[in-house]
Amino acid sequence: MKRSERLARWAGAGLGVVGGFLLGYFMVRGLGTNAHPGWAIIGLTTLEGLIFAYLGTPYLLGGWRGINFRLTSTPLPDLLSGLLGMVIGLVIALLIGFFVRDLPYGYPLSLVLALLLGAQGASVGLTRRAELSALFFGGGKSGLDTHRLPAVLLDTSVIIDGRILDIAKTGFVDMPLVILSSVLRELQQVADSADVTRRRRGRRGLEVLTDMQKDPAINLQVTEDETPPDGEIDAHLVRTAKRKSWAIMTNDFNLNRIARLEGVAVLNLNELAQAMRPVAIPGEEILVTVAREGKEPGQGVGSLDDGTMVVVQNGRRLLNQTITAVVTSVIQTSAGRMIFAEPLSADSRRSPSRVKPREESA
Image (cartoon, rainbow, N blue to C red; front, side):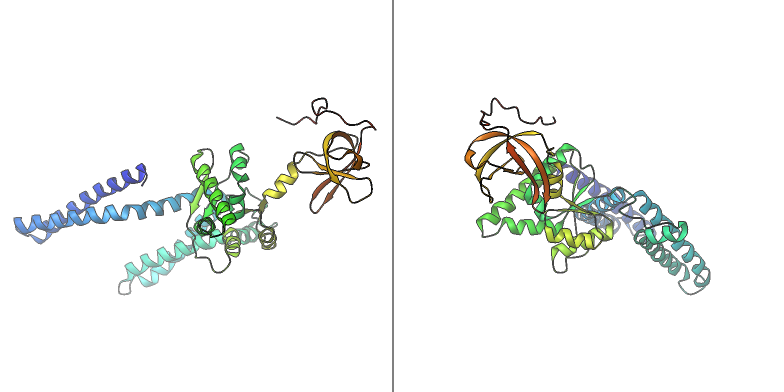
């Protein structure tokens, strides 16, 4: 248990003692009980207050964290829309209250109606903000394309991949990174797998999460599922992200396609890595090691440090040699970027120390 949680629990226990004592004291005064039974009642209510407050404080803290997270992660337009819906619900409850307050238990019934209609109005305002904006103000749809993403859901593939830790440390991802408890359980199952490879991958993912939690600059949130997963965890992630207008960060190809079809924003680390690869310009000199033969006669194939494939024309005779090549063309394929180049000259073999590679940005 964390120190802050222990302090909160004991503070709650102290308030419970005070509340239990005051409750017993006013009960004794109201009943007019004599001294000895009266002190017994006060002692019993004080003990009850201590027990209930000590045991119930963690649940109150959990509820407060959930409310605070929703308030901080929900966009301001959604909060205003929910507030407007709550006000409309309370106005409707007030109008209905004029007719029911003269009935038996009319005032308690009016209070219940106010609570129910206010909560329902807030819920409708949050979930139907786009339709309400289009109804009252006109214009196109609003949603992911009109305001900043409030949070991003991480799936198991991104956590196991591990690159999210380095990306988050750079500060480029300044939005909350959310992990559902169902994803955490799935990751734990992978870490407990009988297969050695899966177990190693799962433990690597747990280590990544631990390092992210230790970094104060990373806003990592672990939250409980509002509804239990029904079937595939991928479908559950898509439903949750769509309901909350969050994005999903994944490396899974199928989850990527399903989420985009459902209108959910997707952040794919593989696409990010592909976009961050340096662009080769025709005529630029590059340093490449010819590692194997190509498909066409005389071709040699190598790769840059970032994994980009380089096809060297007339490079077969230069196998296992590091050469300077001139870029002739660059094409984009489904597997990534491919560079075609030719040796700089017939005697293009050079020592890596003598060849100056492309400058990299700091």
